[in-house]
Image 1 (cartoon, rainbow, N blue to C red):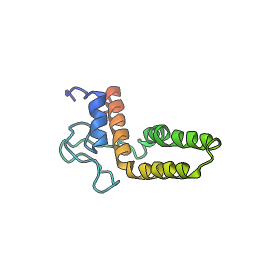
Image 2 (image 1 turned 90 degrees about the vertical axis):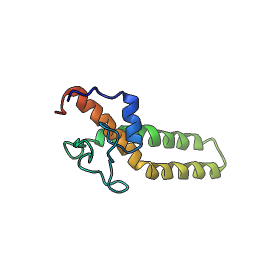
Image 3 (image 1 turned 45 degrees about the vertical axis):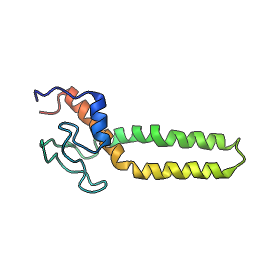
Length: 122
Protein backbone atom coordinates (compact mmCIF):
# COMPACT_ATOMS: atom_id res chain seq x y z
CA UNK A 1 0.00 0.00 0.00
CA UNK A 2 1.72 3.15 -1.16
CA UNK A 3 -1.13 5.49 -0.23
CA UNK A 4 -0.42 7.64 2.82
CA UNK A 5 -2.36 6.87 5.99
CA UNK A 6 -5.25 9.33 6.35
CA UNK A 7 -5.12 11.55 9.45
CA UNK A 8 -6.94 10.37 12.56
CA UNK A 9 -9.55 13.10 12.21
CA UNK A 10 -10.39 11.98 8.67
CA UNK A 11 -10.61 8.35 9.76
CA UNK A 12 -12.93 9.18 12.66
CA UNK A 13 -15.15 11.29 10.39
CA UNK A 14 -15.37 8.48 7.84
CA UNK A 15 -16.22 6.01 10.59
CA UNK A 16 -18.88 8.32 12.02
CA UNK A 17 -20.47 8.66 8.57
CA UNK A 18 -20.31 4.86 8.10
CA UNK A 19 -17.91 5.05 5.15
CA UNK A 20 -14.87 2.97 4.28
CA UNK A 21 -11.85 4.17 6.30
CA UNK A 22 -9.49 3.72 3.34
CA UNK A 23 -11.31 5.38 0.44
CA UNK A 24 -14.18 7.19 2.18
CA UNK A 25 -16.68 6.21 -0.53
CA UNK A 26 -17.75 2.64 0.18
CA UNK A 27 -20.48 1.79 2.66
CA UNK A 28 -19.66 -0.08 5.88
CA UNK A 29 -23.11 -1.59 6.41
CA UNK A 30 -25.65 -3.41 4.27
CA UNK A 31 -28.44 -2.70 6.73
CA UNK A 32 -28.58 -0.87 10.03
CA UNK A 33 -25.82 -2.89 11.78
CA UNK A 34 -25.01 -5.66 9.28
CA UNK A 35 -21.33 -5.05 8.48
CA UNK A 36 -20.15 -5.72 4.91
CA UNK A 37 -17.19 -8.06 4.45
CA UNK A 38 -15.26 -5.65 2.24
CA UNK A 39 -15.52 -2.22 0.62
CA UNK A 40 -17.43 -2.32 -2.69
CA UNK A 41 -15.26 0.54 -4.07
CA UNK A 42 -11.65 -0.17 -3.05
CA UNK A 43 -11.94 -3.82 -1.92
CA UNK A 44 -10.58 -3.32 1.62
CA UNK A 45 -11.44 -6.28 3.85
CA UNK A 46 -12.92 -4.60 6.93
CA UNK A 47 -12.22 -7.30 9.54
CA UNK A 48 -9.46 -9.83 9.26
CA UNK A 49 -10.78 -11.85 12.22
CA UNK A 50 -14.26 -11.93 13.66
CA UNK A 51 -14.18 -10.09 16.98
CA UNK A 52 -11.40 -7.63 16.12
CA UNK A 53 -13.60 -4.69 17.11
CA UNK A 54 -14.43 -5.97 20.59
CA UNK A 55 -11.72 -3.97 22.39
CA UNK A 56 -12.47 -0.74 20.54
CA UNK A 57 -16.22 -1.03 21.08
CA UNK A 58 -15.65 -1.79 24.75
CA UNK A 59 -13.53 1.35 25.15
CA UNK A 60 -15.92 3.63 23.22
CA UNK A 61 -18.99 2.29 25.03
CA UNK A 62 -17.39 2.74 28.44
CA UNK A 63 -16.25 6.26 27.72
CA UNK A 64 -19.51 7.50 26.18
CA UNK A 65 -22.23 5.67 28.09
CA UNK A 66 -21.17 3.68 31.12
CA UNK A 67 -19.21 6.46 32.85
CA UNK A 68 -22.07 8.99 32.56
CA UNK A 69 -24.51 6.42 33.96
CA UNK A 70 -22.20 5.77 36.90
CA UNK A 71 -21.93 9.50 37.57
CA UNK A 72 -25.72 9.85 37.34
CA UNK A 73 -26.28 7.02 39.80
CA UNK A 74 -23.70 8.49 42.16
CA UNK A 75 -25.23 11.98 42.09
CA UNK A 76 -28.75 10.55 42.31
CA UNK A 77 -28.08 10.11 46.01
CA UNK A 78 -28.13 13.92 46.40
CA UNK A 79 -31.01 14.83 44.04
CA UNK A 80 -34.48 14.28 45.49
CA UNK A 81 -36.32 14.74 42.13
CA UNK A 82 -36.54 11.47 40.15
CA UNK A 83 -37.87 13.07 36.96
CA UNK A 84 -34.51 14.33 35.66
CA UNK A 85 -32.83 11.07 36.56
CA UNK A 86 -35.27 9.07 34.42
CA UNK A 87 -35.23 11.58 31.55
CA UNK A 88 -31.44 11.60 31.31
CA UNK A 89 -31.27 7.81 31.71
CA UNK A 90 -33.81 7.40 28.90
CA UNK A 91 -31.85 9.75 26.64
CA UNK A 92 -28.63 7.81 27.32
CA UNK A 93 -30.28 4.46 26.58
CA UNK A 94 -31.79 5.84 23.35
CA UNK A 95 -28.38 7.25 22.33
CA UNK A 96 -26.73 3.92 23.13
CA UNK A 97 -29.05 2.12 20.70
CA UNK A 98 -29.25 4.81 18.01
CA UNK A 99 -25.49 5.39 17.73
CA UNK A 100 -24.49 1.71 17.50
CA UNK A 101 -23.61 1.85 13.77
CA UNK A 102 -21.68 5.10 14.24
CA UNK A 103 -19.69 3.68 17.15
CA UNK A 104 -18.97 0.54 15.14
CA UNK A 105 -17.75 2.71 12.24
CA UNK A 106 -15.45 4.67 14.56
CA UNK A 107 -14.13 1.42 16.03
CA UNK A 108 -13.52 0.07 12.54
CA UNK A 109 -11.63 3.25 11.61
CA UNK A 110 -9.42 2.91 14.70
CA UNK A 111 -8.78 -0.75 13.86
CA UNK A 112 -7.84 0.27 10.31
CA UNK A 113 -5.38 2.85 11.65
CA UNK A 114 -3.70 0.30 13.93
CA UNK A 115 -3.55 -2.29 11.13
CA UNK A 116 -1.99 0.25 8.72
CA UNK A 117 0.61 1.44 11.22
CA UNK A 118 1.57 -2.11 12.22
CA UNK A 119 1.88 -3.24 8.59
CA UNK A 120 -0.89 -5.87 8.73
CA UNK A 121 -2.56 -4.56 5.58
CA UNK A 122 -0.94 -5.60 2.30
